[in-house]
Amino acid sequence: LLNIYLNNAANKLSIQKASTIEIKKIDIYNMLGQAIFTTNKFNTSDIFSVDFPSNTSTGVYIVKVTTNVGNHSKKVIKD
Image (cartoon, rainbow, N blue to C red; front, side, top):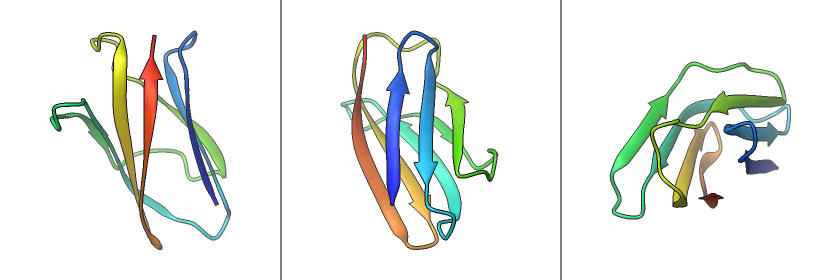
């Protein structure tokens, strides 16, 4: 019920959710486990995007989305 993907060309992290899911927080971690981005301010529509931090290098990152039904994590690759 939650899709997370990174558009590298636009440097945007897109999230698509079911209308019954309420997102509380979005965190992005590097592979060392360090939080590099946190927000709790975003659009409440079913599909929305947030800017991926522009100061990040290429590599693998973990996106953690906290919702009213639990936590969802996904690896994304920035190239």
